[in-house]
Image (cartoon, rainbow, N blue to C red; front, side):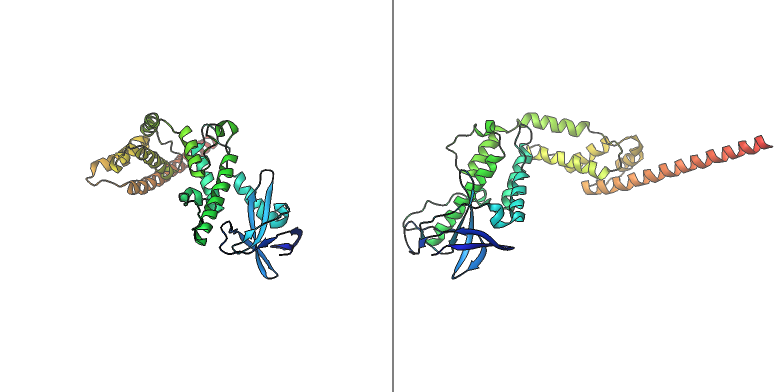
Length: 311
């Protein structure tokens, strides 16, 4: 095949890839390269494959066939070929992953999984490694193996990028599976379940509502703490959580709490949230009316005093 120009999404780019290959379907060492189709020029549908080299990012162009390939590739600037917008998106996705430290593992892992999922690179984290290829492997087997290998390689690089060298060195270099590497890192940040349970339970018992006008958010936060305890195998019933919420409410909710204690029916957590929101709104209106009444009485008092002094 002759050299051909790569065409980007917004027009032709002044860059050329020299690709030399011979099609030999069924060859034992054939490879299937697949990626985003950027252009179709001439008789072959061209594809771009984004790969990571040791020193720089490279682009490889090849036709969408099973080929026995002998490729000579000119390195190109990814920003030029794919356009600044695409490169910026990739860079922004990767840069959104915070650097792992001693206290942010949960957020760090969540960001890693979201980014890899959005970039469609999380295949190696979702499924086990396919069986190694043999001479008898079918084209589908080869394609699936290549997809998994690409996902594993890119995932491992992105994961390692967000880990300081000191933490990265704690995992053996022999671990080349992205899923296993992530699991090894997670082991280093596993918390003591007993200590975490005590901390969460103490928080749930001692918390008090500060009357900042968002009781719904406050109760949902308590529910979230209870769900963390459940994950640690300490399951709190809804009835107990309802009582803990009521106990944590300030004195001006006394009438509301007495009303609940006097009735036979029990509230679900959702009902408690709804009733608490209504009660908070009622208390706000009462305070407003009292403030207005006090202001009116004060104004009338000043008026009488002025009239008396004038007389």
